[in-house]
Image (cartoon, rainbow, N blue to C red):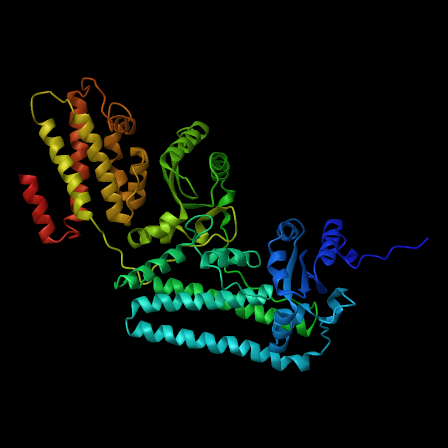
Length: 549
């Protein structure tokens, strides 16, 4: 009996992969198949040399290519004969490394378009150096152009030049990791495809949504401004773009280094990029925090949690956490807070801030001072992925209290309206509770904004007060006034933030307590805003005139 020939793909030790490759050999004109297995990981690489250029795109789109990669960590590349021959003549390091004679697992004996590489390092070294030097030469020309445009204050041109340079870097990364480039796709797709080979890249690009990035939106705005003969003045983003580009350049340098050593000394020590990731501090030794994080994650899928502050007053400890993820809305925050209260009781409280990464990025022009302190490695206590990016910080950044005039005016006029009601008709306190709640909300948001350059969402009154304490713990001295209130002041305030068709139940004692709170808090705000000269004379005069009217 005749023994059947052993499959050339049996070396892969995977029946599904073996059968798939056997089938494409039958269906397509294939010259050679090369196989490399990484020594220090479970990844393998298969490069298929096709004789027809049209077959490359067909095979790249096959579902099993992704399945090979996701399930078996087998990366498959396709290249046609003409391009393969051209890249080898240029000294392309990815092609040189993969297309060695020792790596062939299949060769079509009847094909005239086969390539066998069997040369020593010394013969290839000059080609490698020329290939790498070409990258550095063109890269330097682009960097010098950006510096010149920046010096000339050609802001729009700096942005477009950065975009060109980042595209140039990504193209080289594609070439060095896959042997080919994808210049026909947009920047979003380019980044997403490179994540297949370099997942670390996602730590340098803030996402707008699962498929798009903030940086592409920024470049689109610049192009629109150019079309409309306008100028983008967001020069603070230049440094963030420079950091991104420097990081891409570092990845390219590391990949050149890696391929050089792989070619020179097959499967010897592989160079890897040092990952600049901040280590988590040992917050997890806090059992209360650990238990709270586990509980939070049962409610919502998050990207990261930052534990950025902790206070202890008497028997009550408050943890301050920033939750970053999609759909972290106020209702979710309230539900999580309620759940944590039911578990930990009154002894432990949790101030939860929730935002998605794109919202933070979009609002850095106003809130960067607040977030830049929180989003640090030393505060990170949970991350669903090691490559979540930091925001693209604006540098230099000069914090400003935009619209403080309107926030302060709202708090002031709420207090004046409160006094009119409280000092009006004898013991007719109808509406006082609602105005008090409005004042307290307005005061807290304004005070937090003044102290931290962050304007919180409409949170519960207790959460807002906790943020006031974070903004300046000296404000805690007024807690004694809250304790004199006949019932829970935070529940009272939250209840009265909406209209109820009932007779006001504020008695004289409660009215006097509220009056004292308004007086003390408004005085505190005046000291900060007015005495601190955060508003100019014109704005102050406007407020005074309208308050008198």
